[in-house]
Structure formats: structure tokens, C-alpha cells
Length: 147
Image (tube, rainbow, N blue to C red; front, side, top):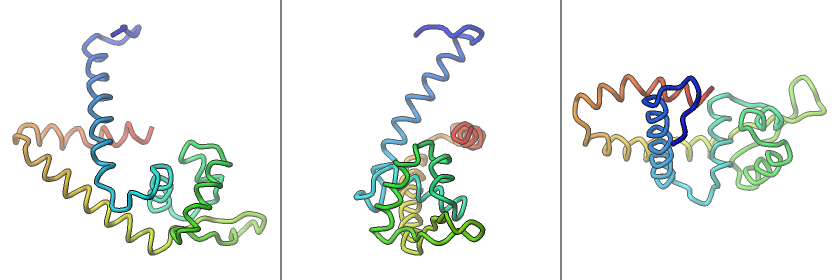
């Protein structure tokens, strides 16, 4: 593994282990979804709407790090399935806001519950010391995911 200037070999190894572990765990968690007919981009957009509330398709595209035309397609697919509503923007009638529906909220909650139950069962195999490390690391991983 090539060294990065200014980064110790131990930190480089830790970053590599983190990357591999996060990717494998994310893949396994994705298999716990309640509705596998939804793509990951659609599910991610719904999750963002759940966390952040209604927003324009452009704002959603920025938060999801996709191009606006891609988000237009994603929102259209979610709207066809009854998972989002497009409503007039309260201040700018030229725009629309995207809102998750109750059906979407229920599906997200079911997926979260199923994934959390699976992950809790998996983590049940950890030692108490590993649990303590996980409790300490969880907020840091969350921060990394949102930088």
C-alpha cells in the first residue's frame, strides 16, 4: 500500500481497514432492506428527505451529490411509487418541493428496524471491550459519513 506524505503507516493501515470494513458492512446491511425493488439512490434520497424535511429537487441533488437531471429521474420514480409528493414551493411558485409520504416513512422505519435488529444480533458476538470501542467509534464514523 503506497504511503501518503504526512500520514503514518499505522494511520494508512487503519484507513484501509476502515474502508474495507465499512464497504463490507454496508453491503451486508443493504441486504436487510424491506423493499429491495428500490435502488440505493432512491432509498438514499428518501432517507435524506426523512432527516432533512421537504426541499427542492436541486437541494436534494446537492445533498445526495448527484446531478440535477439524475435527481429529477429519481424523484419521478419515487413519485410514481407514491413515496414522494411534489408540491408548490411556499416562496417561489416556479419551483416545487419534494416531500416524503407516509408510505415512504413507514417503509423507511421498517427497513431501519430490520437492519438495526440484524446489526444488533451481529454485534452481540462482540466482547464487552469491543462494544466499548464501538460505542466510542460510532459518533466518529457518523461524522466521517457526513463530512
